[in-house]
Amino acid sequence: RRPPSPDAAMWSCYSFWMQQVAPNWEVVGRSKKVEAFWRLQGVCPLARGAVWPLAIGNPLHLNRDLFHILVKRARQARAPVGQGPAFGREGTARLVQTDLERTWAHLGLFHADGPYAAQLQEVLEAYCFFRPDVGYVQGMSFQAALLVLHCQDAFTAFTCLANLLSRPFFLSFYRDKTAPLQLRMQIYDRVLAYNLPEMQRLFLELDVSSGMYVTLWFVTLFAKQLPVAIAARVWDQYLVDGECFMYRAAVGIVAVLAPELREMDGDQVLCTLLGNIANRLPHHPKVLEAMLGVKLPKEAQTMLDHLTAEETVQEFKRPAARSPKRNARAAS
Image (cartoon, rainbow, N blue to C red):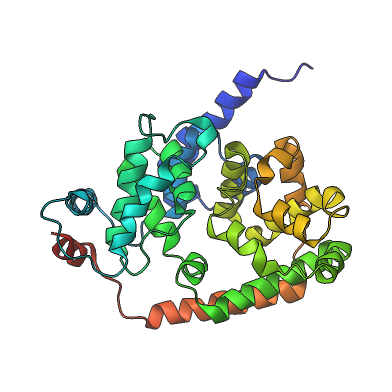
């Protein structure tokens, strides 16, 4: 029997997500059937604009009114005349424009006259004023750019970005929380040693610690390091499996690069891991196959479960985050 054409397969996948899953998300979005399909094939690229916002959710209860207030505040701060005082890290918003053209520069999508430059600038500047305790951090533009490319408008991309970055995993990097960061590096080291013991030994011999490279992969959710198509597929997996897939993805990348890395000295290894690895990766199914082939040892899973539980308790005890109304008053 002849297999279905690519167009037919794409339409079938799109119909599954848009007709069966998205309209009934609260009932079937996290069902075993949907998650099994999700892990096997990922989210249809044409459906990500609807599915990703549902998967990320909006626990911060952000709304369009707040977004427009934040955008207006950012524009006022950008103006040379009448600029008010900056609070916290709001001043980092001025770095956004510089980084726009560096974001997937070879695609030209975010250059000054690019089709998505204005949306990306709005999303990032609004986030700076929404979270002045975090502000803009270099590399954040790649996460926001992937959302801008997939979401239906700037508000949806902003909502996804703000809710995504409010997760303890990302805040531990953006706010430089030493203990959780160290624990996450230990989890990664255990996953690497379990799956690629020879590469773990090589890195130790070359004095290349995980904190030197994997933190930069994690903080952007691989959006900066991977080609857009592979990065989006990694996000599909992260949104269904959570943080545990981050470790599998990182070790999978090392597995794919291992033949090259074995022939390098310490400086070359570090330059490779910190550089543009997108051009070194083979066809995207092979990369994903390597990631999915990585196993989490029981010890690493236990450490991750304890860390997640501890961060959940801390988040519950934390004073309530600023509500949209309070943010609106602060931004106006």
